Length: 246
Image (tube, rainbow, N blue to C red):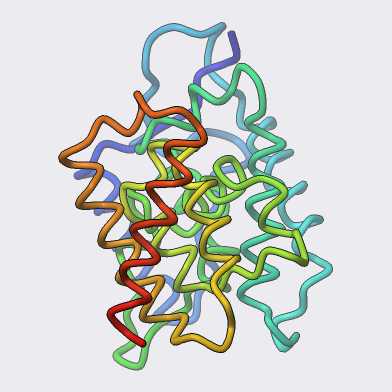
């Protein structure tokens, strides 16, 4: 079992986020906690083989910067490439026994605010009102790094498959909603999205199809279906959505 990673409580994460936002707003460098000591509000859960060291977090930071150094801020499709590379790097880092660490929401707010704040701000900078988006820095499926990690863990090679064209709206529908809790379902839905003919009103079909799958998941035990049964059900739900739009 791996070492335990530092976390923020919900309240401490909000305080640390506001400190980060204040620093970014006045043009100061984002405060880092990858040398010397952990953030003073960090806490550690029980279990594992001890606490992860500050130097180990510094190594994670170095690897993420190296991973993302190939994507310049003004590069075409910067956001998509950033997400793909960040997700791949984090999935590799938390592979095997560290998957349990990655399941803790408080760890992601800590990594985002205390270890990788400059990269987080690069991906989601201040808005027109001079504020950072809390959802992108605090715990939850919309966290800047957790969302990219989930996409890679759930969809794997489908993200880079040239035959599977998934747009950002599709990925949000699959991962930022509750569908990602069932990895098999998310993969099959992504295959269905990719097979939707481009000449049809694709965005509307995908939107309505995702809604239909979400509703079905509340009334049917999808986990009890075989692969063929689940694929057939998804095809039927998306097909019904398409027929209403044609």
